[in-house]
Image 1 (cartoon, rainbow over the protein chains, first blue to last red):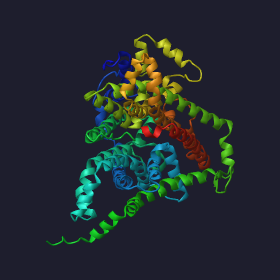
Image 2: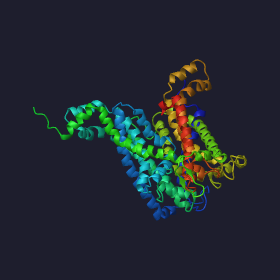
Image 3: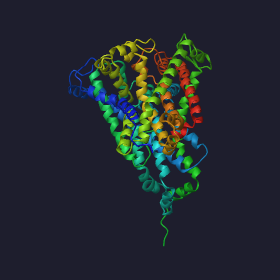
Image 4: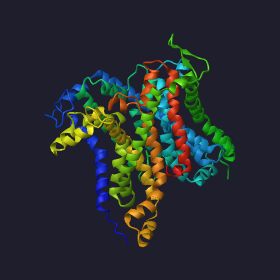
Length: 268
Length: 308
């Protein structure tokens, strides 16, 4: 019998790997408080809360944040409807081309983002659609479908068909069955999928650069600051806030799907 | 006993229940229409564009079928871009398999209870944190005045860092303008995509096989080579699909951390943007699509999709 203790070299290698994964994120939190304005000097010469106030006063940050939230909310709603429909069809019935449908849903996330981005852009160009809020949403909803689909399909598979049959035998019509039987059963999976879709859209930059035109979402604002840094301390603060904002839905999604055994977000 | 009154939707619901094919068609109509029109339609538009060409004099796109743009793609300068990107993607994929293995193996084999949850979250948080924030964190780390230079100085290894930076080709003035820097950021950003499928594959390796191997006298290294690795391989291949594809298509990381030489993604971006040469950008995009097509075909034959 081998011992169940982790061998030391393996534990060290895994520990180093985890440090590599989490260290950079922790560093963001330190830099948000630095007094240094012009460089990325380490260690920080002093700590201050001043930059939080400065960032709070910036209208461009607020405008970008609101656009991102709006895009994420609308894209998530669209993805929830479309993703649930596909999941329901794929899990409840067997039909010709079922594999093709799965592939079609996964494709926007399996191909590099730049492909989706430039493809949408050239399609907008050919059809002379001007850039707007909706061109951003169109792209985001397309790659968010897969996240909702992944979460919903796992839950649909566990939802026993006899529950639905029993409901219909007792005289409920399709909508009542959906409202009282199906929705309560898939609710938490949809919530988890929706939150992950929201996080995915809120953070997306590669496709958005091709579909936003002159509009600025929060990631596009960050990208601008990364390429041409103007206000490093404000960027530090925004970076920290973004990390916090994305952590919360991930933790929530984790606790919602933990008992179900399916792993939310693995198919990002 | 009276029958409950039938609601108007009732007969419709019954009809759909008896004909699941019709139900599936109704459910699928909207999402499939969306994906086919928005996504496949766009990909088709892209493919069509790649067979147009830019008129050198007017700077306008001539909408006639031609292979001139593809001929332009296979010039030396553009081939160098493709070669550089593919080499980087291969290096990132290999390195992430090596770094991911201990994490995935400990998480799959030894971690239980809260430790398992901690491992899971430690991989999920970096996976889902903002991509740009992660790149930004590495800009902070790799800066000449940043924490890495400081750490090397603290332990007296500054000469080592300078020696590494002096290597022609991959070195540079500081880590943030060298290929090593680009490589590190790629490795960091895509590492979770390798860990998760690898862990899923390792969790399916039956422990009694490892016991049997040890009982038959295999040393741990031999068990690893002859038992664990072959069984974990589909997971590695599945992870490599992500690390390879994501590196091929990225244009932001090499733009922010790295030397000024272009990668495929950057070439696509500048061709469609400042250069206004959408056909060449479209032709460039066909390269990662073709490479990933071949890669996915190979991965499917290796059985990697069962590990996703």
